[in-house]
Amino acid sequence: MIRFKNLSLFIVVMALGSVVFAQKTQPVTVLKSANENKVDISIGGKLFTSFLYPDTLEKPVLYPLHAANGTVVTRSFPLESREGDPTDHPHHIGLWFNFENLNGLDFWNNSYAIPANKKNLYGWIRTDRILETKSGNTGVLTYHANWTDQQKDVIVEETTRYEFSGNENQRVIDRFTTLKADKDAFFKDAKDGLLGLRLAHELQMPDAKDQKFTDDKGNVTVVKGGTDHVANGNYITSAGKTGDDAWSSRGVWCKVFGKMGADSVSIAIIDHPKNPNYPTFWHARGYGLFAANPLGEKIFTNSKSEKMLTLKKGESVTFRYRVVINNGSQTTSAAQLNTLAGSFAKK
Image (cartoon, rainbow, N blue to C red; front, side):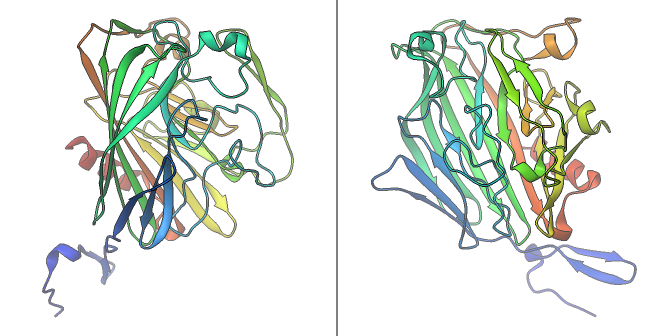
């Protein structure tokens, strides 16, 4: 008989006569740069991601994201260049959080590509201070930012807490974001929001045809198709929607999965029951945009209903999301994601 001196380290599962051990949590290091607007997060001694908040970006981002095996699962453009990565939508950088229409300003589509004479139509998210960094079995990063117009007038203040954890085959990000209104703040129902992730080329769904997408200002973006046989991704949701059918559907979680090199990789975003308009709508595009947007109900339901969010001055709202990245034999099943969603719901 096997005896365990420290039961907190192991979960014992009897299956087909074998004993399976849960993987041990790896230590997390959260290190703020002394001379850059950057915080590096390492798990098990390997870089997982960096929190970037320089003045040259219109919003703070986590970039790049690595699977536990070191594979970069986010697109490189526009901050770097990797062969095969598409170069559409320059505002899609790593993992970010913003929205298309707050008091008439577009925070989502803002980037270096917007002409100076049109910048007044767009908003910025300016991180002004890091509130906490903590290393350990769970790494913590907390920051404060202001959602502003081009004159730097503050509409809402953001306080975000990240919790990072992982093991040999998994990385987990828990994000808790509170928005507090400095003035009356109106989030108008819109397609582009709220938590966004731009996937590496391999995790795109294969499509040989070019696609055209038009934003609310009439700007058209063309996403080039291709037949390089590298893109092999697919989506599945907690409601059983797959592929292109995941877009505009609702679910507690959505997962993208595919091969990267010789390894299997999956990324799941999990919603939280305390979030507005739970369960969220999935703004999950085959070309590589993977987003959760509870505030885009009008377009996702073909105008059958809509969702507006209004904060009076001094009021606040909190959004909670979990991102789970797996590689190898530990890519997440529906049952495992349901368990992860259940544990996250208690936080």
